[in-house]
Figure (cartoon, rainbow, N blue to C red):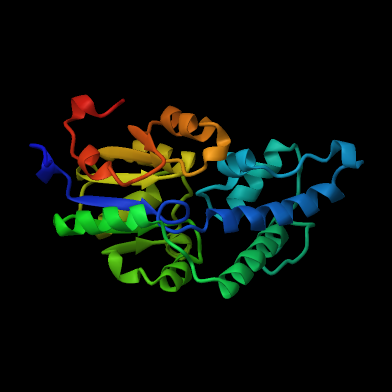
Length: 259
């Protein structure tokens, strides 16, 4: 049922990984393989080794560029590494770790067709039929490849990814620059747009950017709602595990928005 403020919402922009494409687990597996190998070389014994966890993923690396995610994770473990050079390999520099992670993820892309979430595709289809503009954003430099693998390039009226962020010198989330560039390409003001995000940093970016409404999605039932709580604390107006019923929610009056 459409509400009276229907026409106020002119666009919805979506994060890619974990929101539209089912690639979060592939990213997490690649990070875990690289970080666990690295951590074992930096601990004095197996007893002091603490593996990379889903909590680490969501807290430190989800939704931010690879280099920034590595810096944040290393800080959380009180580990210092030199930046190194962009073509480094191995575990002795931040760039080296980033390149190892990218190699692991690209190997997964080579071996798999990127799957999508049916609820996200259904929501996008419903929004497009209502005349809403649709944008996609991602901190990943592999966004375009993932979209083409999934066969969904044509669903979006604008795309801003890690390649664009580097070219335009856009700071990472929680700075709203990536999201603002996306909605700007659609020709829509943030106050007329909705953001759908699974990352805490992305929710914080949407709030900072002045977007009309922020939907957080937590697709991980194994985390006992800890991520859902973090998304709410970051400022999400609503958090769900399924986007099926979000269309009507997006168009509620502002007084009903926080539940």
